[in-house]
Amino acid sequence: MTIVFTDQSIAQSQVIAFYILNHFTRRELERYYKLLTKFEKKVTIFPEMYPQNGKDKNLRRAVLSKQLSVFYRISSTKITVLSILDNRMSPERWP
Image (cartoon, rainbow, N blue to C red; front, top):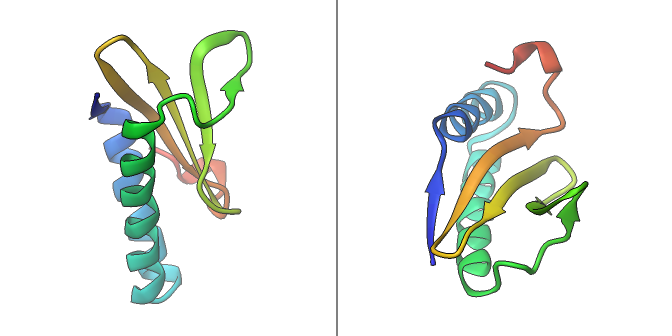
């Protein structure tokens, strides 16, 4: 299976990276990218590893750390990352 990031998830990832870089250390930024890379490797092998979220059986939430969650949808040929959320940021800062 391939992983596809939506435009929204890419924008959110860039905002999170910018936020981490401005409020934390470069080491935290590297940790953030490592978490996303590990998520990609795991979810391509085991797409149903993370629990379903709500009523939609194909929507899943992966909690990568206390601060980071990824929402994704499974289809027959691909995994679509819909949203990447950082709980440290205030909601008004999201694009």
